[in-house]
Structure formats: structure tokens, C-alpha cells
Image (cartoon, rainbow, N blue to C red; front, side, top):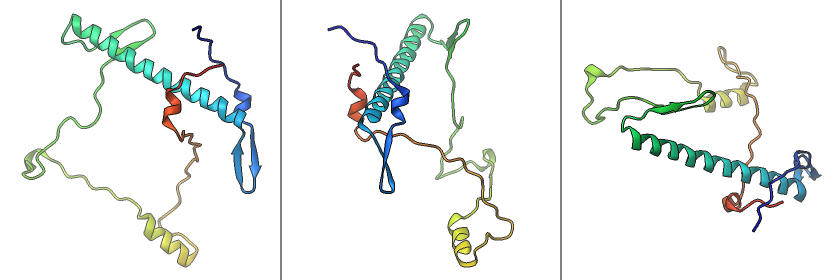
Length: 148
């Protein structure tokens, strides 16, 4: 079976209709967005497989393999998170440091605001940028082959 290249129409993704207070995505827009999400999932799987192939090939050559560097791309191991952990039942206090920080209590602040109509002295609202989130209701759709 010949596989056709996947194409999609970005303008079609913006087609939706207003139904009462809700915006409803038209079927054409949903189909185009689904194709895009399927391609994204495919690319993510291919990148993961490629990382594994690079790591396996490098480790076959050298058990101390840390990565490979090209002219435009670097594929190197990185480590995230805390380097050490400790026994919480018997903490070695000589090797631990205590950290304390303050965090606004949103529940208390919201209650105060509802009662007084203003924020407590010393509290201001952060400017949080809204971000559009796209999710798929049936994850199996990401595994389907996209077709033209």
C-alpha cells in the first residue's frame, strides 16, 4: 500500500461556530487539528526511538558513552533533579540544610477579597498569561495512521 504524504490546512483549524455560550469546532477543523496532533505524536515517538538508537549504538562502542556532537546537533545525556536523597526516618542533619519560603494562601486571600472587595495589604495579583490547551478525548486516535 502506498503511503500518501500527510497534508493539513491550518486555516481550516480556525473554523468554529458559536452555539449559545459555547464555541463548537466544526468537523473540518477538528479533522485537521487531529491530523496535526497525530503527526506530533508520531514525531515524538520517532524522536524517542532515535534517542534510544543513538544511546544503544554509543553504549555498544563505549560503556561510558555520554553523547555525540555534530555540526548542528548535540545528543548528550543530561541529569535533572536533586543529586542526592536521604533517609527520612533517620535524617543525617549534618549533611542537610533547611529551606523555608513564603507562599500566598490563595484560599485565605480569596475569602478576604470576597468579604472586603480588596486584596490584603502587601498582596497583589500576578499577571498570569492564559494559555490555550489542546487535548484529545480519545488517546487511541493519536495512534491511527493519518491519511490524506
